[in-house]
Image 1 (spheres, rainbow, N blue to C red):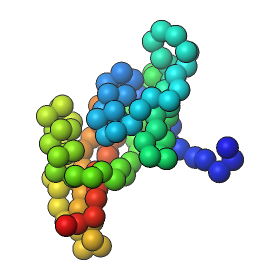
Image 2: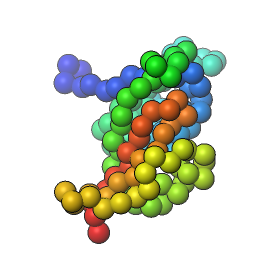
Image 3: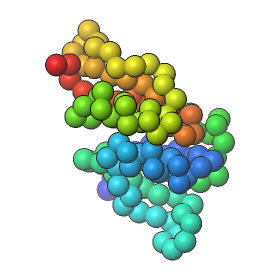
Image 4: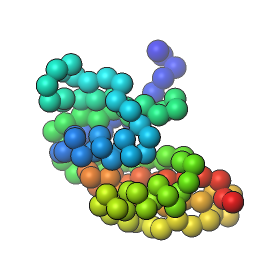
Amino acid sequence: MADRAFPIISVSDLPATQRFYERLGFRKTFQFPPDGEPGFVTMERDGSSIGIGAGGGPDEAAFRYWVYVDDVEETFEQLCASGAPVVSPPADQEWGERFAAVRDPAGNLVYVASESA
């Protein structure tokens, strides 16, 4: 697995952060410990992976994550309805993509994007 890399973030609320990424189409593929409340999970989506560890604070969890989705508006609305703080609403970009930005439960900046129509 030397050719594989993924971000690992430390968060104060692992279950809420896991649910957030599930709304973006990620699924849990690994949990430690294997039974009971996880201290770490790996989540995957179409060849992309993210590791999420319990116990971190806001300073430890700072990163940016770019996620391509089929429908930016629909995904953005789902995330907003679930309480995700809005950073910027969906907008077309000059390079041919459309994206919106929200924050996950740990305060990390997450971009949801697709090709412009």
